[in-house]
Image (cartoon, rainbow, N blue to C red; front, side):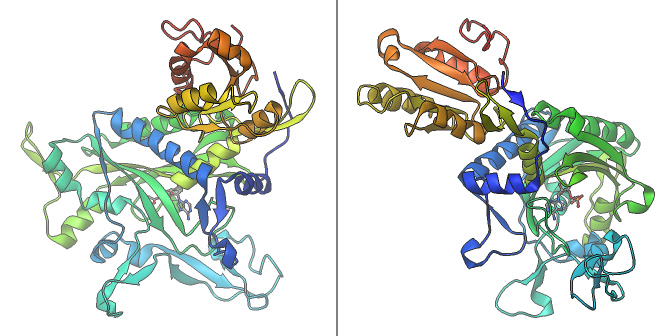
Length: 458
Ligand code: GAP
């Protein structure tokens, strides 16, 4: 087994690996970059798509009480007045009179500039919503906002979903999409940016049932990260103090991750009560209550909201997967121990030689067949050792090696990223075997009928 080097991953190491291997690039880099905006490269887009797909699978497809939605980013500007964002979605901003740097007043530990010790201006409240204009005339009547959360798109569609799906509380609506905030102090790579993606659930319950559902969602969301490989010791819950609750929240618990910058919010689970539906009912004049047939009672549901950042979750999965290890020969290897479901490339197909005799089997048959089911990379450049290192560094869980013996016995070798152990399997079993392993089901256990999937000790 490879030996882990007990060294903490730093943000610098992650940024460097992400750029080198094509996970994340600085936005607009050839023009000098644009502050705190990032682009996902060929591997990054696969990783983030896998994170979002795993979230959708667990929270929509595998649940009877959930449905999905994809609402527009641009919405009626009154929505943001009703939701309280126009008046209260603000941060206190101070400037240093000497070095001109800007800070969030509520993040400062003292009354002087943390950079140069200079005098600070009085705090002014700064609204975080990006504004733009709809249509050709740039006046106040044409002003709209880029949504600062996806949640409001769900609330204003509550009645549409109720009537079109015949769902009844308790039920929830899930949405993944972009959100925009003109953050005063973005930074720490993709941790805090001005354009980001959220994965949000608004779960509607009868008032009184909110406490129990809140607990359910806290547990459910915490365990989702663990099931996808986050180390339990790097995850914790932090209930909010009353004073730090958002304007809409009756209660909130954060799931925090031990990022390279320290313990920080990964996801928040809030009890929004009936705040949003009540506000939208009042300002739109529409009836947003639910009529309960059994009791002949109408009520405005309470809402439990698990709200996660897709970029922040992707960063947490990256940081948690990163390891520097010594292999059996004592050579250093950098490896991303992604859960196979999240790994951008599931399988690498590596012919042992570039000779024409292996090509028809390795490229035209095995690679062509596997890519119908998995994200596969074909690599025949340089030594097999170097190719394994390249795949380790991007977190590919399985490498399939084809050698000259394969031409005779119809078997290939599967090499496991984490243990570096190898097993030889008949080509007829390859897809089935890899399918079980990629699903994360059969690392060490025997899947039904798969005698060749005994695990890498077998
Ligand atoms: N609808 C509730 C809501 O938006 P939030 O705590 O402001 O709550 C939810 O945001 C999640 O969105 C956060 O836990 C974080 O993962 C992500 N998020 C918020 N602001 C972000 C930013 N500037 N950059 C990246 N992710 C952000």
